[in-house]
Image (cartoon, rainbow, N blue to C red; front, side, top):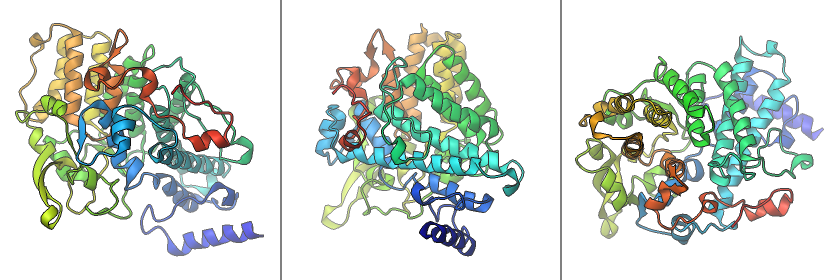
Length: 470
C-alpha cells in the first residue's frame, strides 16, 4: 500500500510541478521505483534528468575530476597541500579508507544504478507511451551515462592500460538489489566491451545534438574515440581516427575561431560537447571542491614542469593564466590563477569533452599507425593556426616518436586542466615498459600505483570483490 501511495505522489509532483529546470528532480532510489513510477515519456524525462544530476557542482565530477589526475602527473602544485594530495596522489600511497577513495566510488555507482533503473523500467514500456523514436533515444542517453560512469570507474579503480588484467571495476548492468550485491570485478577486456556496447547503442540510436548537458550520438562517438586510445588493442587507433573524423565533420559542433572564444563563450561555445548543469552556483568561499575555488581561486597552480611546456611565448598562455588578487582583507594575495576556469559568477563549465580533443586524438592515432609525418603535423597545425601560434614544420621531426612527443606537449598546451586527460596520456605513452609518467613524477615506480584501491567499505559488504595489489 505504501508503495502504491508513493508512486501516485511521485507522479502527482511531476504533473503539478512540471520541469522548470531540466535538473530539478532526481530519480528516486530503486527500491521505491515500481513499474508505475515511470509510465510515459514525461515521467521518463524526469528520471533521465536524475541520472545527469550526479554530474555535480563540487568534488568528484567537478574540480576533483581534474585535480586528482593532474596532480599525479607532476603538472599541478597546490598552495594548501593535504596529506592525501602529498601522499595519496603525488606519492601514489592510496589508502582504501580515505574519503577521496570512497566518495567517488559511492557517487558514481549511484549514477550507474540510476541509469540501470531507468533502462530496466523504460525497456518495459510500450513505444506508444513515447513520441516517435523518443523511447529509443532516451535509452541511448541512459546507456551513454552508464558508459560514462563505468569508464570513470575503470580508469580510476581499474587497470585500464592492460587489456589482459583481471582488475577491472565492478560492471553493474542491472538495478541494485540484495540478490546481486555480491559481484566481483569484471576483467579489463570485459569492462571495455560493456562500455563500448553502451556507447555503440548511443551512437546508433542517440538523438541529434540538443543540449550541452545531455548526450547525443556525436558525443558518444567522441567518448568512444577517447577510450579506444586508452585500450590500444588491434584496430583501435584506426577506429579512433574514423570516429574523430566523423565528430570533426559534424555540423553539430566545431572549433571556435579563436582559442580564447572557447572559454569566453563558456556554455555557449560551439566547441563544448558535454558539460554538467549547475543547480546551485558555487561562490569563491563555498565548498573547496568547486572549479572556481580550486582553479580560479589560486589553490592549484601550474608546476615548474608545466610552465616549461606552456610558456608565455605560446598565445594560449594568456588565455590559460592570469595574475589576480585572491582572498579578502589582510589575507588577500596575488596568485597565478587558471583564467579558463575563472568565472566571477562561479558558473564554470566542465569541459568533459570539446572538439579540439578530437584533433589531438587523431594526430596521436595517425602517428601510432605510422602515417606520414607531414600528415600528422598538418592535423596539429589546425590547432596551432587557430591559437595564432607558429605552425610546426614537418622537417623538424625526424621520426614519428618525435611527432608523438609534440602531440603530448600540444595536449598539455591545449587541454591543460580541463578533464584530467593528460594523466591517461602519461600512462599510455609507454616505451619498452617505461611510462612517460615516470619522467614527470619520479614517485611513480610500478603499474600497481596507477589506480585507486577499492574502498574498504565495499570489501566488507561485497566479499566477491578482490582488492588490487597494494
